[in-house]
Length: 289
Image (tube, one colour):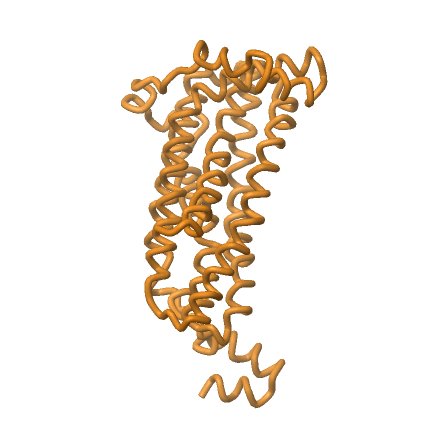
């Protein structure tokens, strides 16, 4: 692994670490009864994640362009495997840090409610003894939360399955499209835009099915309709499904039944041939032949 790949892996790690720690925000919101403040403060970390995401794509695209320019026709798939492994490791690390992070975040929520200043909160967290207090509140996950987890009230199997699928698609959205462009450089610009299609499918599943379900469950805990142990059990299942989603992404990166990604020659698709014919006339016909 060279330095360039290590940097891209680090950016991938940050993206998926923050995505996993988002579950801790729900726990902190439930415990402090300040759900709106919790999500508002978490947006600071979301900015870090989106910044990492904005650098990840160009860095990876540059790496692919350099390989194409040098005529390298093999080895890039291993790079994508490393990136997906970074996503899995980040998810596991995030799962391990959830108990500690939700305690830290709960204190941050209460501090912000009292002083109502983000700069003051950051100053206290990093310079005024905040880091020294971390050792007092750091904890490891309770083994019983894993060994005794079952699908309890408020979480259903289809939500877990959808979360696995959504995370898998979201994880490979950019990677699969860039890899398709690497396999067929003539259509790499078209292939790179296909990531929005895959990410769009994942976003629909998350925003239409998964997030509303968890939001209702979060409100039920605040209102006393659902117990906190049941809520934590649901979080454990969702974190586990997120890990499974990153592992599934390894399988879907070069899927056999999906010619759209396994070979970026889009003219093998009838619908794509019609599009090419409409925009390029004879070129679309040649593509179909």
